Structures are given as structure tokens and as C-alpha cells.
Amino acid sequence: MAKKKQKKTKSKVKATAKKSVRKVVKLASAKTGNGNGLPKPSSKAWGQAGKALDGVKILDFTHVQSGPTCTQLLAWFGADVIKVERPGVGDITRGQLVDVKGADSLYFTMLNHNKRSITVDSKHPQGMRVLEALVKTCDVLVENFAPGALDRMGLTWERINKLNPRMIVASVKGFGPGPYEDCKVYENVAQCAGGAASTTGFREGPPLVTGAQIGDSGTGLHLALGIVSALYQRNRTGRGQKVLCAMQDGVLNLCRVKLRDQQRLKAGPLTEYSQYGENIPFGPSVPRAGNDSGGGQPGWILKCKGWETDPDAYIYFITQAPVWGPICDIIGEPTWKTDPEYATPRARLPKLKAIFRRIEDWTMTKTKFEVMEACNAVDIPVGPILSMKEIAEEPSLRKTGTVVEVDHPTRGTYLTVGNPIKLSDSISEVKRSPLLGEHTDEILKDVLKFSAKDIAEIKTSGALSAPKKEEKAA
Ligand code: CAO
Image (spheres, rainbow, N blue to C red):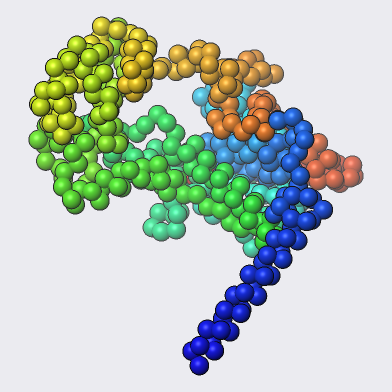
């Protein structure tokens, strides 16, 4: 009986295998010519075969930083990003931290390149008519409103899914489902709730936030990956889905080495933290580690020549074990190579502070760039502390398009950070951010195909323009 069953299963497996072989063969012999249903490799020159996300339309309902970071990336990869803004106001960042009177702020321009802007009042019936047309036309809706705001507009997931079952609805929220899901969240709230602040700073000082916008821009990056994955899955399923990135989750994902250390505490003190060498006991949670390196190689920030007047005359120095010999030679302590007090990483651990002080005696005789040159020549990993001024002026970053100069009609030229993700066949160009409502007419006409009569009707309804002053006061 058992044998019969086995035989049956075997022949079933064989049949399935045969079937799938047939399927693969069929795909390979498809008109497209190439295996797995892919078209033939393009014969166009690299970078001339369009952009990675050509043909993808994004209804961009984002504001401030997290959402705009995501949609800007998608725009750089070729998606048509249509930014919907409130008439007369726009994204609040247009008017925040203004440096040129009357012009969009750098806050806005640096997060909204390569997009088109349409102004629509989502709370006006004619505005909702435009929004529904956008939902039907676009592939992805991206938003980072406060929890519940999209639903209050009437654009619930159910409604969107009914209007366009292929639409992907991607959201940034501060927290995922749970006790804080209704909270509004900004960058530093996320850094604190995601574990970054409690693990940043010096042990004896308060928690610190970091200048890298890991809550906002970090979550925007995560969301972009979610959207691209959902677009890929849609090729197979034909349907959209919800994509959610909570800022707390995004920050925690970037802090995963600290959750690693939290669990390692059970096995004993964290020997790579300098407090171990200083004989300071560990508490129940991962402590702040100052400038200790996050991995197994001890590192610290050391003064360089000019530190007395230049706040950035410092270098990050890593005492990587395999290059301990060259480190001893370069700082003029060749006996440390063989001295059992210094020769092994284990022997060095309790004296790291003193060792770094000795290395600093050497780094202080050189500029950070001289240290960089001398150390890299013998494979010692070091990192100069670069100021934003130095980064802005660095020619190699200009050459790769990581730092870009952009022209803008109302503010003139400014510097921005270009696409940090380089694709060899989808080259990003950085185009200036749109003025408020700059593309309203062309989107109504060319994207949504509204007739001239319909456009006139929508426009006279007031759904696309700021309320007049008297109306506002009434
Ligand atoms: N027409 C009419 N109304 C519009 C509109 C339009 N085109 N666009 C937005 N609005 C309305 C929304 O409907 C909402 O109204 P209701 O509260 O009446 O429903 C309102 O504008 C503003 O939404 P908001 O609550 O999102 O804005 P806020 O400035 O109060 O809060 C923020 C900002 C960032 C704290 C909140 O949006 C949030 O928590 N977002 C999620 C997390 C996030 O992305 N944070 C990072 C921000 S970057 O630091």
C-alpha cells in the first residue's frame, strides 16, 4: 500500500517536472527570442535604452522629507512623478528655512527634483474628480500624511483598489500598528523611538540624534524598495498592494547591529566597546559607545594638525588587526609589533585609550589628508572628517554626479545631492524642482485627457486655485 502510494507520488513528480520543462522550453522559444520571457538584449548603447522606471506613473501625495525622498528617487529612475499639492500653499517645505526671499526653499528644491506639480484641493468635489482620474491613470500612490488623513479625504484603500485594482498604495507612517500608530512623527522622534538616539553619543552624556536623516530619508529609501518590489510582483499578479514603512522600523533596521549587541550582553561584556577596557561595568541595555566602531575592529576619532582652530581637523582611525604591524611602524613604535603587551588584539583591548592617545601624537603632526595618504599607502583604514564645505567643493563628487549644480528660475543656481544609486543603463539627470502648480494644465490635458470644457469647469469651480482672501476670511 505504502509502495503503491510512493509510486503514484513519483509519477506525479515526474509529470510535474515534465510540465515545467515544457513551460521553460516554450518560454525560451517564444517570439521574444530569449529565455524566461525576457525581450532580446537591447542593442542600443548603454544609457540610451530609456530609464529603469520609464512608463511608471506616480501619484505623489508626499510632503516634507520622508515621502519626497522616495518619489525623487523613483523620478531619477525615470518614473513620471506627479506631485499633488494644496492650492496656494503647496508642500509646506516650499516656505520653510527660506534663504532667497520669494523663491522655493532649498529644503523643497533639494527633495523634489524631476517631478511635475499640480495643485488640487482634495476636499473640493471637483478636486476629488481630478484625484480619482489620477488614481485611475497612475501605477503608484505615495503618501506620508498623518495617520488617517488619506481616509478622511475619502481615498481609503478599498476605494482606491476599486477605482484601480492595479494601483500600489505606499505610505510612510511614524509607527506601525500598535500603541503609537496614530502619532505624528518627525525625524528626531523616529531616531529616538527606533533605537538610534539611545545608542548614539558618549556614555557619560545624554542620548544624541545624528545629522544623517535616517528617520526621514532612510525611510523614504526603504519605501522606494518596497514600491519597486510591489511593481515587480504586479507583473505576475496583475494587482496592486499596500506598502507600509514605519519610520521606527526603518531606523531600527539601520540600527540592527545594536540589537545584535543587546543580545550579546547576555554572554558577557561587549569587549570591543572602550568602556570594557576602562573597567566600567555594563548595564542591562546597550550603552552609548562614543566613537567606538560598530564592528570588531577598534576605532576612534583622533585630532590632526590644525585641530585647535579647525573643528573638522580630525580623522577616524581603525586599528585593524591585520595591519597592526604597519600601524606600529608608521607611528614609530616598532617594538609594539612583538611586545606581548601589544602584539595581539586581546592584549590591546584593555589599553585602547592609551594606544589611541599614542596614535594621536602622530596624527597631530599631519593634516587629515596627509594621514589619509600615508595610511592608505599601507592599507590602514582611516576616514578624514569632511566638512560640508569640503564635500561641496570635492571635484570627484561633482564628476560622478553625486554633487550637482542645478539652475532654478527664481533662485538661481544651487548645489544638491544627485542620485546616489548609479545604474549603468539608466543614467540619472537632475532636473530642477517644479514651481507650485507649474504643470497643472499639461497634466489635466495630456495625462488625464480632460476636454477643454471639463478643464474650464474644474478651474472655475475653484478646486485648483487658492481661495481668494475674502473667501478665506469668511
Ligand atoms: N488639498 C486639501 N487638503 C490637503 C491637501 C490638498 N491637496 N493635501 C493635504 N491636505 C490636508 C490633509 O487632508 C490633512 O487634513 P486633515 O487633517 O483635515 O485630514 C492636512 O492637509 C495635513 O495633513 P498632515 O496631518 O499630514 O500634516 P501636518 O503638517 O499636520 O503633519 C507630519 C505633518 C509630517 C507630522 C505628518 O504628516 C505625519 O506624521 N506624517 C507621517 C510620518 C512622516 O512622514 N513624517 C516625516 C515627515 S518629514 O520630517
